[in-house]
Length: 166
Image (cartoon, rainbow, N blue to C red):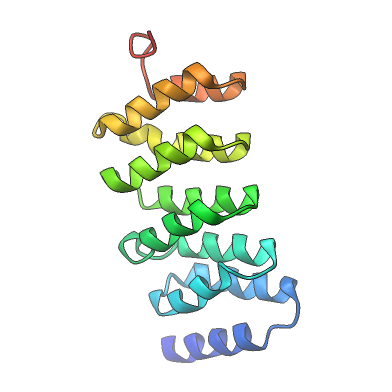
């Protein structure tokens, strides 16, 4: 049965007409959690349609993080659409991996990120790692002092203490 579903999804993805149908198939692929679709998702991360890129990123969040982390981080560094960047960060955080190198990339991105929704996703990713990784705590503290959105300052406060912020 799994082979039949996999074959049907691959065929549906290859023959999808328009971004709406492609998005539906990408969502089904994400729901499958089948890493054999990673080459397809990787390709769709470069699609001209931001909706397709966003749903490809979200589908990757259902795959094993050790298979997707490098692609997600690399794409995060080049993606121009804030909704896609948010989806990339959410997919990275779904693995709950506190890998120091990945968090360092996330910390750099947080410092440079102009979109509040993406900053919120980055804070939610870095926050749970602040106890294990100093780079996460340092990034959150630094962001608190430069943050202009009160709700994001409150979000940071969920992960670091008042003493840390002084």
